[in-house]
Structure formats: structure tokens, C-alpha cells
Image (cartoon, rainbow, N blue to C red; front, side):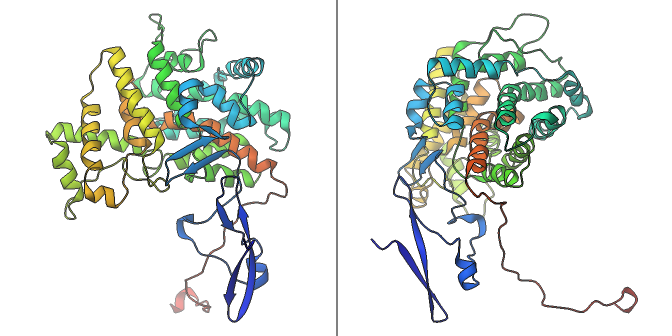
Length: 428
């Protein structure tokens, strides 16, 4: 097989190396293209551009495959825990029992936030979106730990990793508590990672709160499913911010802001709002699907289709089953889940969606199960961020461990006016 692609421009030929990944993905290396030819490539939205080589997550959208460090997402969701998966993503291998115990203990030690940081919430309006609050508070962490901000010092980076994993559930829960005017609880080191979060979210000083183990396990699995997803918008943002040598807190804060958008992490909130509107208007699934297909109707079937997946999103299948199992075990019925299942059944048998390869994505069911677990709708995207924290950290670390890493600096094709002469303001 020829290891080069040949490009001919203006009668000149250029040989561009072909790079092959471990899963036989192939890419044309254009690193030296501009230096050799003066040309750049143009790819709006980076739909066909590989920004890096990565050993963290493998995603095959045509076959519906998702693996973390080689492990199928289905196996990790069934048999692992979020902190174990976080160790895998960040350290590269599954931990031994001794390694995992030390890892969990290190994270648990950092669940409490500085008292002065708690006071920061008082400056936010009650109606502030949790993602705005979380982004601001995570950025503020860099002011509390100035001694551990060097992105190329392993010991300082390790301290920042433990602080982010430990404190972000607390930061998220406090964003919710502030919005409803309830007091903040201190973390409890007797509880697991997810149990502690649930207590911080839903407990009060008035009475003891014991997290339901069924709910805790379902939420832990959701965090695993959201832990990483290759070079998406927020992950790329974290890498790009990190390439400037911004500290880990600042880089993660940038990723939270990118995730907030409705085209990215905010999509699960849109799905729930869509399902609630269908229920409120008394529509059948078929009626809404027909509305979504009509060109003169503004209705949109959220939660279907994905930039990468052209098959059933493997995470959606797991979440759908988990939602059904958890609701049955808790003895809870969900009208939203019933509508979602009906919409999926209709859409998957409709030629309009089949031709366009529009399958349910992770957002289609994640919002439903968050709702069923009692997570308030504005906090859905913050839950997404809590899961994605492990992947963001892993990707940030991988960038800094690359030999010869450089600051990210995309090129452009200029389409504005050619050279013009300045005219003084009185002569315009």
C-alpha cells in the first residue's frame, strides 16, 4: 500500500504521508503542506479534520462502537464505577484494588470547598444557570490554589486533578441549592462519590438523607457513559485552552462553557422540554413525528441524529434500558419515558429517518432518566459536565504529554476587502 497521498496543484506534485491508527483509521498528514506549497486546507466545522492523535477513546459512528482505552462502553457501564473509569481514562489502565482505593481516597479528601469559595455563590442571582455558575466557580479554583497551577509539573497537576474530581460534584450541588435558597451541606466521607453528590443535592440539615442505592448506581452509570467522547466541541476547547499553557482549572472552565450550548451538552434539556410539550399538548408520537417532518412546521424531533454516529448510539441503548429498570424497581411511572419510547419506535420505522440515518443519541434518553432521578432540568447539562470531567482531564493531560506540542492556531481563508486607504473621519 502506498504510504503517501499525492496532491497536484499548478502542475506541481506533493507527497503527503498517510497515518494509520490502531483501528485502521487512515488520515492524510498535512503538517508540512503549507511549508511546501503555500496551501492550507479549508474544513468549516472540522468535519473531516483530525486535530490530534489520541489513545483515549475509539469511536466508530458507522458501526455504533464506543471504547475507552480499548474497553467497550457496554462492559464498563455494567461492571465498573465512575471513579474506576476516571482512573482508566486519566492513567491509561484499569487500576488494581490497591490503586483504586488510593485513588478514591485522594478524590474523597478533596470534596469540601474553601469557605470563602462557598461565599462566592451569594454573588450569583438565584436564577443563574448552573453551567454559568459551575464555569465561574471552577475558574475561581485557580485563585485558591496558586501553588499548584503549573501544567508541566506532575505533582501540581495531580493535586489539581484530585481537586477537580472531588470538588465538582460539590460545586454542582451548591449551584442547585443556591437556586432554591436552601443551605449548603458539607460533604460526607462515609458515602461513595455519587451518594455524596445526591446527599449534597437533596439533603437538608433538618433530617438525615440516605441515598437510594438504585438511584446512585444508575447515576454512576450515566457518569460513565458521559465520561469521554473523542474530539467533540468541549473536549477540543479544553485541549485548545490547555495548549496556551492555561492551568487545568481555567481549561476545564472553558470546556464547561463550550458544553453549555444547546447543540452540545444542552441538548438533553431540549429533549425533555420537547417531551413535556408533547405531553402538554396531548399529541400522539405519530402526530409529532409528522409535524417534525413537515417543512412548514417549526417542530423539531430533538435527540435524533449525531455528527459522528450514523448508527444507533450505544450509550442511548444502555440509558434506555437503565431508565426502564430503575423506574420499575422504584415503582415509578414516567409519562415522558412512554412518549420517548413511542417516538423512537415510530421514527425507527419511518423512511424519512431511516434514509437520513437519524437514530436516537445519548441526549434522547439521558434527560428522561435525569428527570426520573429527581435532577432538576436546569442541572442536566451540569450532570453531563460531571461525567465528562474525567475525559476532559485525560485529554488535557494527553496533550501536555505529546512531544513537541504546540499552541493550537488554526488558519483561515480571508474573504474581506482588499487593501484600502484610511480616510479621516471628517472626510467620510
